[in-house]
Length: 256
Image (cartoon, rainbow, N blue to C red; front, side, top):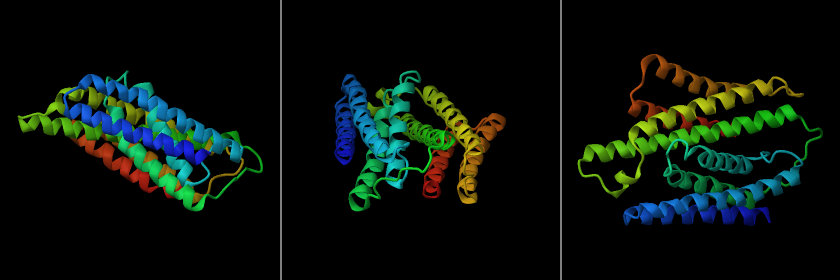
């Protein structure tokens, strides 16, 4: 049943993205509000999937690569719904849906081809659960920051074209995108810091590779924030940096 929940969720995000794109091309900006409703519905089915997998394992459902991808997708959606309106980024969900759909398709294929089954822990370590959950929530924030960076580059290109299309009038002002990107980077770095600190209180100390990889991602984002604080990176540089940093973070997932 959990596979069905994940498939339904993925289809909802695909439909939401297609409808939003069609509405934007037709210049019907008000129709994009449907995107929020679809995101909430997709989130519900994501949550049902994670609930089923959590019951199967008797712990936070992040025991394999497929579940990790779904958890990051869930983090992206829930952070968008929690922060999108506050940052005045209603279209952030539209740009997020292809990433969520891609991650979940990979997870579906992985689970249907080789589901490892139940992996209950011998003892439940709350520090391990906190470490894993906060780290992956951080990846969700980093993903949204990268997506905000993509939106900035699209908006910047529209401005420089001197012939902006209908998308230009739907995208938020560049200042909002820059502020949101920076705040998401800070939120993600704080979450990842909490996750790494929790690792030092775990009953079984994490192996050197896991700790090195987590530390490397943390260093990349802390360095990015410090460089921006000192040098005041141009918005375009910050956007590209956020995208590259998230790409690096994704490459490390296999070691987590």
